[in-house]
Image (cartoon, rainbow, N blue to C red):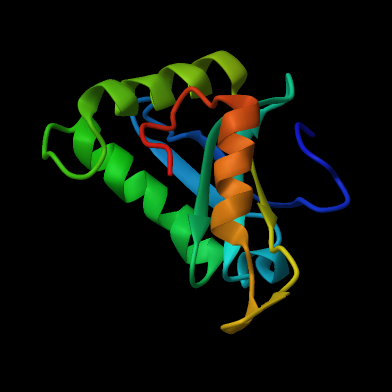
Length: 139
């Protein structure tokens, strides 16, 4: 795995669809996918992170939303994912066969505003450290 195995739990797999021109996500650990206020990372077996993001609610819902955005772009129907990025997802999956999604929910930190999970800070730091290919914006 490409990140700390103790903190990041495998949650899902992304693969090419049967038609090889779309993608699909399969949940592999429903318990990990229930986590909210968490950091998500997709990467391949060569230990390289290609996308790092967050979810405020369920990690599983966020991961399952990826195919809709990417496939919509691939079919020319627009959407949140630019065509160039959707094509990179396809190329990565063709090259590596599968991308693994892992999830980390940081522990709550006491602050003046109560206990807060610093998942956005963790995301920002991981993006800085790993420079993932498919992250377009940096917080």
